[in-house]
Amino acid sequence: MTATTRPTALVTGGSRGIGAATSRELAARGYRVAVNYFSNRDAAEQVVAAIEEGGGEAFAVQADVFDPGQAAELIRRSAPDGRLDVLVCNAGAGFTPTPVLDLPWDDFKAKLTNELGSAYTLTQQALAIMGARGQGRIVYVSSAVADGPPAPGMAAHGTAKAALNTFARFVAFEAGPLGVNVNVVAPGFVRTEASAHMPQELQRRLAERTPLGRVAEAEDVARAIAMLVGEQAGFVTGEVLTVDGGHGVARM
Ligand SMILES: NC(=O)c1ccc[n+]([C@@H]2O[C@H](COP(=O)([O-])OP(=O)(O)OC[C@H]3O[C@@H](n4cnc5c(N)ncnc54)[C@H](OP(=O)(O)O)[C@@H]3O)[C@@H](O)[C@H]2O)c1
Image 1 (cartoon, rainbow, N blue to C red):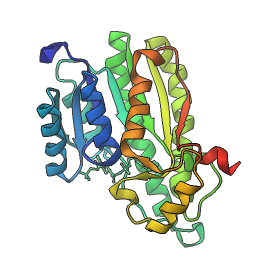
Image 2 (image 1 turned 45 degrees about the horizontal axis):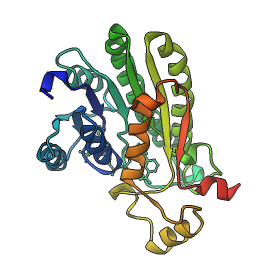
Image 3 (image 1 turned 120 degrees about the horizontal axis):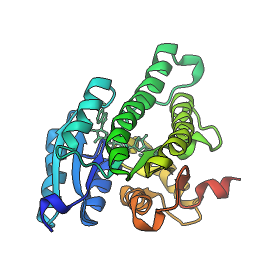
């Protein structure tokens, strides 16, 4: 397969954690992957190198997706030949769980603005390209905490992700006639650097309370994303797919 025949996928925050696993998974499935990163260029280049060693194609693209101008430019740089088949809105900034009583409005607002603002701009720009070709897939990485039982200190994060889930439904409604499917993956706890602060004992208890008997690895989420952008999900749009090993079911 030559470079020009591969479909193109952009993974925001594609350099570490869930995004890195998604970049590798999509590359293994034949996509040319734009691996977006913010500050850690080495991590992005390692993902690109691993993909290339496996015979795939990828390139690193630096951009702060929380900045609307950079997010718009990221789409253009990721689709230099005017082709973008898949957009995975995954990038998320780390945060410290904080109760509402201790959380200044400006911090709450920043969380909402960053999460939704980046999804909004990336979606607008991607839809223009995908719609012109009459095909495309968008997947947002949300969180099971959005619709699950409230977790301590997660009001800002949960509210932002719940808004993202709702936004996705409206985008799916508008994007369907353009030939673009829009879905959400909502992971429970996933072992990444962002979640490494969770004590091992808590992770062990979480695994015990999960029907599938363990916590998620980034690859579990990556495979769910790959499924949603694959042919088998061609008639699936506007859905939120929870990826938590059944943890949410067990809590009901
Ligand atoms: N881990 C979990 O338990 C969990 C559970 C549910 C949902 N999620 C969601 O999954 C997504 C990924 O989480 P993760 O755990 O994989 O995070 P992670 O390991 O901390 O990786 C974050 C990625 O996002 C990039 N990034 C951060 N800020 C950015 C910005 N402003 N612009 C562009 N890229 C940016 C980082 O790039 P640099 O390294 O260059 O900064 C990195 O590639 C997030 O949306 C998160 O909310 C995670």
